[in-house]
Length: 296
Image (cartoon, rainbow, N blue to C red; front, side, top):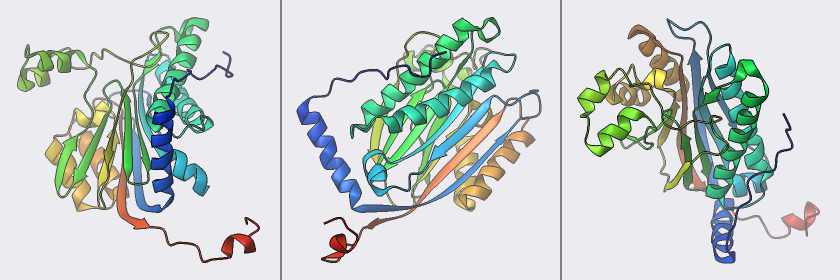
């Protein structure tokens, strides 16, 4: 496997780059105060945990303004520990590729980073017989300034809790969800379908993959939950909302996992919660401070 794979080239117009440079400049004046909570569990049935979560919060102010902070959850598949390997490679390589791309166009950087991870896993599955068919979902969140960027492949989810209400921001790439969207199944029928866990899009199965990427404005007190289907299949949206509103992100992540285990824990389950405690405008540096620090 060649870890020097080129990141997918992006064609960005001068106008698009200029727009995103302006958005990055605005992010330089914003300070996000966040709280983080995370928990993953084997579950009550599986013999190994193929779920994975990762995050990276840059210390460098310039990197933070341009690229933001990255959070992700992946749910691997493939057997013989292949799913565990796939989910770990997907997140680590996507984060590495995302920050290696200096472009301020976050949406395109996210797409390219996920495509990069897809290529690595696809090549590995073809090179090693035991890894044939390995793959993973990925759901990633980037927080930059007052914006949230979400990238998704598969059926791991991103929820947002805002002003006491919960909203599912992602759409599952699954057979039953596609049938619901077409009107062929009701939500109730989808919940009972034996094909509930059949996903139609994943990382590493083909040379390239379609990545859903979208953005929204964030607000103080917003909370984002990234989770695998081992959690969302066991709990209702009300269960999730109540746990997140009741406790800190760290306690809520543990409470959600424990509740999923009590409901059966039929799959690996993972919860990663990010709370926006406050959004502050950075104070202007005093005149002459740059010269004192050797920057002017």
